[in-house]
Image 1 (tube, rainbow, N blue to C red):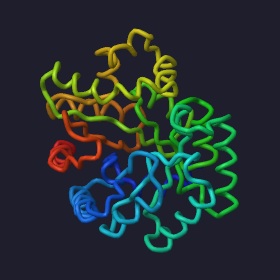
Image 2 (cartoon, rainbow, N blue to C red):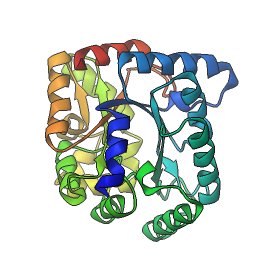
Image 3 (spheres, rainbow, N blue to C red):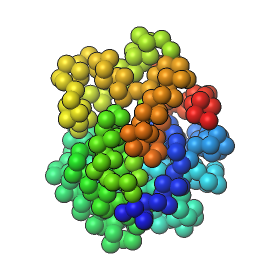
Image 4 (cartoon, rainbow, N blue to C red):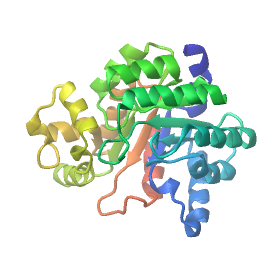
Length: 292
């Protein structure tokens, strides 16, 4: 898959922003989102990753507002959007903005999808349908956590976009993927130097994910214990999945993921007390500066 992944690696760049707010369908926010996308491009981010079960329609406003920025779904649920609609959306964006849309796919979670059955087999069938509809493997990526889905990311896609993972998971994923495919994990960032306050912010955000077995099972595979998953997560768990602290500490955490084999990092800024759909533009500027 390395031949098809190489152009995508170049397109997405080294760093991107992961945001639920950028996928908002509120017409009143369209101007704000377009302005934010244009600034992300100016700041040097290579990609905007749209959180939640986003689709091509959510990506269109950002692509229209920019000229170079790649836009990816992170992560489109295969249960919410059928393959035919996904293929049609991809074709439309490819015609209007060639090479800039990345179709990120995932199986979501049993608690969030009533039809959740045999997720791996369903994902394979979905990829078969995308193949039949002409969506190239080199322009789609999978939200892979376990070994089987990572292998599928290697064999049937351009790579993987794992969510809520550690540097150790990144190293394991790179070993399975090999050198060619794109590996673009998401990493949460809290710009707060106070350990207690930063970890409180992290735990408040992490709590809902610790109710989802796909994530907790992955943590257990990585050597965390049931105790690490209690009360919003142990310090060990929080420190493994968040980058927090001053600029130097955050840079070191970013470098840890890159050294483990990440080609690209999707950076999600988490701000204490902010709504999940807020656009933390001031924080995006600071992150861009500390990574420059």
